[in-house]
Image (cartoon, rainbow, N blue to C red):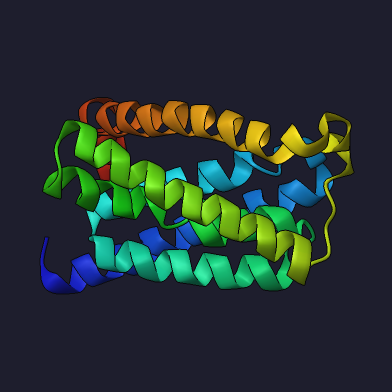
Length: 181
């Protein structure tokens, strides 16, 4: 692909992923149960840009979607979760796995995740004044138990991202290439 076509492809592909992400993020305001699932899906879409274009361009798309989500999406909790973890993690995941092996990679991934989740909790509760009354019945164990559950779900998310990446490369990539020829 020549440089001019590749630049057109980058803009078109980045625009499609950005638009799809914003539309999905709007869905969190309509269906409340999508607060965490949609930001995770939108983050996973960035893997396509990392593979087809570059991590740098994926970072630009992440920033654009994060800013737009924080400004226009009704579900601020979902927007914060995208901006503070799900948006950049698929980009960061590749770097971590290239530089570190096995247990060390998982330690860094869990450290990034836990810092991001705790930070997002404080932003959501202090800046946006969103309360979490649903977990009050657990008393002082509510937040540690919630964090434990989140860490288990994170492991599943990370493994799912890896499998989606493989499925894309080996099964779906040829179809995407045809669409953007």
